[in-house]
Each structure stands twice: as C-alpha cells, then as structure tokens.
Length: 416
Ligand code: C5P
Image (tube, rainbow, N blue to C red):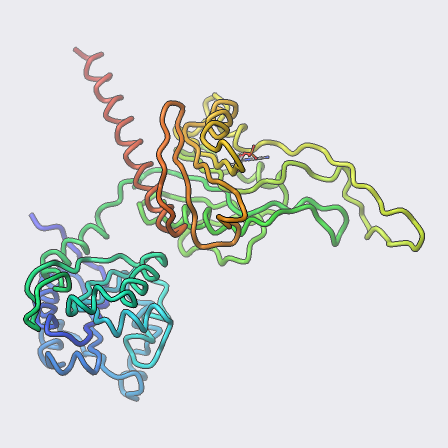
C-alpha cells in the first residue's frame, strides 16, 4: 500500500528545462498520495509547460510572477514558503541553482527560496557540461552545505543530444525522496538533549570568562535529531544563533545553570554534549563592577573548577541516557586523547576534532571530525557542520536500532 501524504503541504518550484514535463507527472503522484501541492512556475518554466496544465493537475492557482499584484495579494512569497512542509525544486536549472547559492531574489522562485526556512529538495536538470562546470559544482556544494538535499541528476541521454550526468531524476524517484522525507523518522519516540555554545562565567556584572564557541555544531545536531523525529531539548550557552524552529531551547549562561537545565531535561534516551563548557569559573562573582584604579596592580582572578556536565550525565545510574556522546577538541594525538576522555567520562562515543590554525573550527560552518568509540575510530571528511550533524543523527539511529535488535534477541532467547 502506498504511504499517504494526507495533510502534507508541498511547494513545487518548476524552473526552465525540458524536464519540466516530468514535473506534471510528479504533481500527479503527489496529489494521488493525498498531499496539497502548490506550484511556482518560473518565467522560463512557462516556455516548456503551461500554467494551465500545472493548475489543472495541482487543482490550485499557479504562481508565476513576483510582482503580479494578484499573486502577491492572494498569496505572497513569504506565505508560500511558510505554509509548506517541504519545498521541491524540480527541475532545478543551473541558473536557479546559481541564484539560490548566491542569495539572489529577482523572481518569485528565487525570492521564495531566499525567504524560506523550510527543508528543500532539489532535482537538477541541465546539459552535462553545465552540470560538470566548476561553477555549478561549487554552487551545488554550497547548497548541500546549507542542508539542501540533492536528488540526482541521473546519467544518460539529455534533451540536447549529449550523454552524461544532467538528466533530471524520474518523477517516481523524486516522489520516493518526498516519502522518505516524511516517513524516515528513525528517532521517532526518542528523547534527546543537546548542549551547545560556550558558557559565560561572571567576574562581575560586566565581565566574564568565556570562549569562542559559536554553537553552530550543537545547533545543527539538535536540528538533525529533530528532523530524524526525536523530541529534542537544546540547552544553549550564549550564542548569536536563533533557536531552531520546533525545538525546545533553554538558554543559560553559566556551567552551573547548564548542568541544572540538563538534569531537569532528564530522563532522555540520548545526550550529546557539544557545548564548550568553561573548565573554570571565577571563585567570586563581584556584586559591583571592579574598578580600574590608576597605579594599582591589576586584580588577579582566582578560579574554581566547574562541574563536568558530560561526566555527570554519563555516570552510571538509573537516569543515565542510553547513549551519551561527547566532543573532544584536541591539538595533537586526537584519537588517543579522545579515547582516554571517553573512558574517563564514561561516555559511549566521542566526536574528536583537531584544533589548529590550519583547521579553523570556531565559528566556521565546516568541521572535520573523527567518530571515536572504545575500540574503533572513523575519520569523516571535512564537511559542513549540518552534514556532519545529519550523519551523526543517522549513526545514532543505527546504534539504537542495533541495540534494540540485540535486546529483542535476548528477550526471545530468554523466552525459549
Ligand atoms: O574535558 P574536555 O573539556 O576536553 O571535554 C569535552 C567534552 O566534555 C565536551 O563534550 C564538553 O561538552 C564536555 N564538558 C562538559 N562539562 C565540562 C567540560 C566539558 O560537559 N565542564
């Protein structure tokens, strides 16, 4: 039986390309599965298929022009994006891909994509030389790094008579990607807590001890777990990032506050400590600003140790999450040091990364990590923090799945 897409709202952007005719079949498949589909047809898209065919199949008005008074009064580009659960761009022309990668907004399709905070799947279609061109490849890399999912393109003959990579994926394959998006929720019914960002440890009302953590990796992990279906609580130190949509975000400042927030988020199945918790806090938090006095020696700040949140969460006990993952930023011997940390803090996995001037991780959108367990380690190629987060979410799902299978086998053996 086909899975239903009842009550799902899909926005399909059709740009210019011979493959646009395949999008009519895609609309039919989406409608048959019960979803609502609204379509934006770019101006060059109208050279290949007519708004009337799109409107007839989608049973909705077709949106074609950003500056059409009618389109904007009835349904602005912001609403088109906000009311969608998922945006598909099929076919995605080289031009629309380039515009999206560079944040251009000169028609309804590109403006809607720029104004969107929704998951986006793109199915490129173009001449193989255009696809292979470094410019297109760079643009695709940019989009993937921002978390856009690519479907295809496929290999074979293209409309221009050349053979190579550039054919749009078949409607059935794009439809399959839509189904996976809605149904592959491997962490459904799991509860996760994620710490992210730095902590600020006050010296007085205006000064603090802190660090350079941007929180980007932790926020990306919280989002990836949420997208995989988990019920996520994000406990964040001070960052400039907006709270991810749909995720319970608790903002804290100090390590003590972070620990308390973590403890109140228990029980959880998964805990991921991506926060760069300050190891020390000033012994004293002065009630009033320390004055700078001429000819006085600068004050010294006595420090005390902060609680190790990861070690506390990972400590054996009834409230210990099934899977506890920590981060280890190291300057050398990263695997050995990460494994030592894993054993010392009693966690299950460590994400280790090398901190050096050459691999600037702080504040960057990229990361280069190793996944380290007690008896294994695996290097993941340098990629966006979002990509690493998604890969981690998949690994967590596998880990939980294997564990559940093992438990079931034990149950069956016990029953026999
Ligand atoms: O010992 P180190 O600070 O290198 O360990 C890093 C890991 O431990 C990270 O996962 C970090 O979130 C966690 N940690 C913590 N509380 C601390 C110090 C580190 O949760 N006080």
